[in-house]
Amino acid sequence: MKRILVTGGLGFIGSHTVVELQNEGFDVVIIDDLSNTRINVLDNITEITGIKPDFHQIDLKIKKEVKHFFDTNTIDGIIHFAAYKAVGESVGKPLDYYENNIGSLIYLLQEMRNRNIDNFIFSSSCTVYGQADELPITENAPIKKAESPYGNTKQIGEEIIQESCKAYGLNAIALRYFNPIGAHESVKIGELPLGVPQNLIPFVTQTAAGIRKELSVFGNDYPTKDGTAVRDYIHVVDLAKAHIAALKRLINKKNKINFEFFNVGSGTGSTVLEVIKAFEKASGKPLKYKIVGRREGDVTAAYADTTIANKELGWKTKKTLDEALEAAWKWQLKQEK
Ligand code: WQD
Image 1 (cartoon, rainbow, N blue to C red):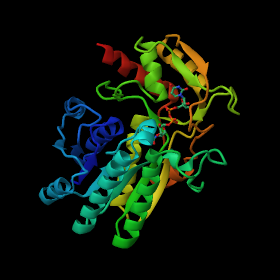
Image 2: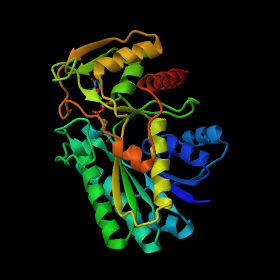
Image 3: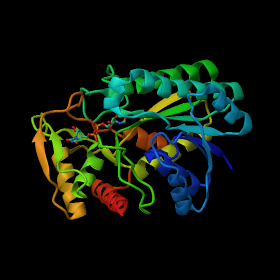
């Protein structure tokens, strides 16, 4: 049985991936510093799968602790989610973002090199493409200068991994996520935004639940079909499954993989107004919203060409936007109780 380390395994995408790993028969060990989640997620994962994952509360910025973990654990592969992820916050706290997102990555790669651990999966982002010149976005689209320190940590992260693969013979896959939404069908795990949500879907569900007064739609003067910005929303369980596919590719490799990257999206673009309409249908509730000015740093449109990921990973999304919104709404309703 392969033992997989999942860093940030109690976070939104991490927790869903832990469930899928356990369902696929992997032995999971989680590292999380609990800086942006709650410890009860561990029990909720256990309720879903019937297996309690091994858990270590470790701050990956502390090199000594990282080394101690690897001294006392045998690991066959790493899925590295642990990172700060708030775009706006990163502009005011660049050093915190670089220290956390880059520092922890370097320490993990050093341990892999020192102990000959193969198989590394990195959470990257479609943000590396900025406003792509062509849509849908293929993996061949050029990387644009990052708009934020957060985005830069993903670009630099990919470069560090690529160079480490080359120098030390590691094998790694970066998954460039589009917009993950939704929650597990058990309604036991989902997104836990702290404070006022910056992302569209949690803001929408909180507005429908009466926690927020109304949604501000950021701009309706974009060159899109209804003037609002287009994104590729992917159900978090589909996204979690992409990690299993990538892990199997690494584990079963016949030749050296070195460094690969794949787009992980649904392949469909939806405008903000389309999302609102679909949400109203899924929840059966009208949503209060107003149009305001554009948000700084937002691109007009981003959605994935998933041809390469579909072919190489043998993976494809199964869930629709409606299903994802319904799951997000059920999750929201449970939070109120
Ligand atoms: C989606 C759309 C907003 C909030 C996020 C992450 C980014 C990257 C990709 C990981 C946009 C609009 C939003 C609101 C709105 N992920 N919106 N009112 O901007 O695509 O980026 O996913 O790396 O880091 O931040 O996602 O959910 O913030 O916005 O109108 O209150 O909804 O303008 O068009 P985004 P989002």
